[in-house]
Length: 306
Image (cartoon, rainbow, N blue to C red; front, side):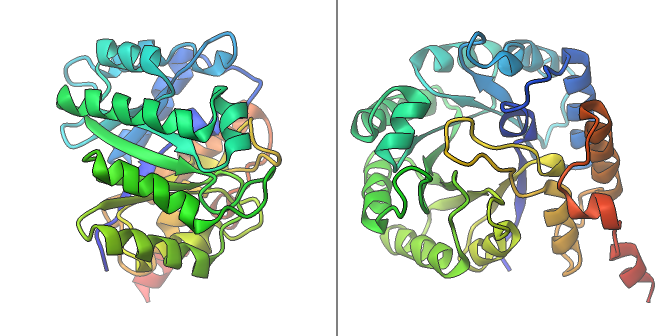
């Protein structure tokens, strides 16, 4: 089994669709809890126009806080999403550890999300990624709507792979496939990742699945079988892209960790602390979150005791 690294995106993808703005102090408390639980990569937010996404208005302040000595474990990485050159500049100024950036394989989704078509966006993102790499920053590039689009329907694999080819030709080898609309199904996941590995067996693969049609965890396991190392998920199952047709939550972090721990993986993560933090999210938003372990509880400890 390949090494698994959890990448928590709840502070960004989980919150960006929420209308109730979370105070900076509460975000800091949640990040502290995630880091204490052993999550290795935490995405603090995105560098976007605060008027369009008020939830992300304090992203710079979050990075400034966790950039202080002793605030972040040495082994942890703080990531941030950037959409354009201005966002990249802001991220450079406040000490982002890993830049996440990408394009949509759906031209319709791309225009709704960034105001640019896919072709124009690819050139922009590659130039940004190369600039970040030159500054010796970690970079992960993604392809959104890689498995389907709520507006366009099925996305031909060739369209996704053509973007992968351009990333690889530009020397970028940390690539995430994002199931923005939640259309992915396991055989499709395995097939697409296999095609990427045929192109470059040393590429670092990441995945980002949404649970729109209930296949999020199944798709994670398909990705795992395909050699994917980085798994993006959101505490409590929060989230959903505000620019897709049917916005639905991410794969739930504590559900994924629970399933991994049942087979002896992700043992370095404190599942109970994750569940406790997810409960706090539910109390803050005053509603039941979609995570299953929140409702049913963990059976990992019970199994270990047998």
